[in-house]
Image 1: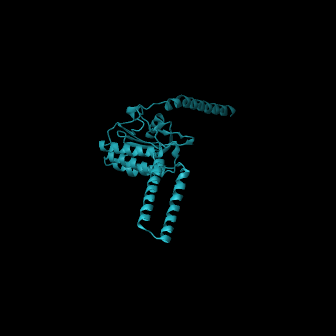
Image 2: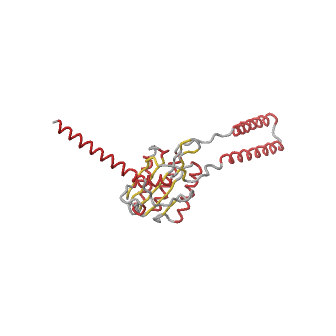
Image 3: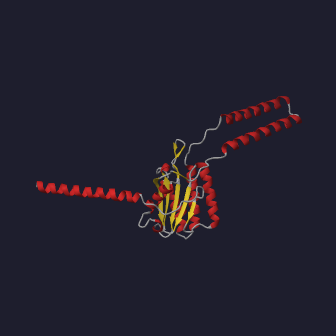
Length: 267
């Protein structure tokens, strides 16, 4: 009985040792794989190797992605390929392929200043494999997985099943843009003079109305105060516009990494 028990323990121990050795040998090999895809430029946003996007739509996608990157520091990178096998992903699940590609390209920015960010988005379409994937940066967590699923099924795969690849990609990017803009991001505080100008403007308006009611309104008074309000309004609009312009001026790649969130689809 003791010998049988001892033999059983030894067999279990041997299997565990073999399993650990397999993990040690194969694990680094898996994660050291490199996807043979050259990433797009910092604000190009598209690598359409499968020629799925109609030329007129390429520029509109870039304009949309450029504005989102400027406004929210969130890049959307669109990649189409003929198959994963052609780029080092033979036999690979699209979730693994997209995670490796996301991390290899470092999509998005891990931090902005001292704040964790990592809100990059990858839309990958593999035509020959008939699969697509939305891969989200770690900053998203899994909060938008359900919405990513709706975008994948209702905006992308819906068109793909009917052979409308360009329409599906455009619809997907537009929906991802809306998803990204719903994410609550910190905004820069307004400078003190914004509030001072608003208070001063309201006070001057009240004073003017009371003064005109009590003393009457001659033609020159209306012209004078009209000119004052026009000038103040112009100056206020210019200051507000100059302070709100600019936004994020960096590129699409800055140390971002995948958080495993997103959605996959096939057709």
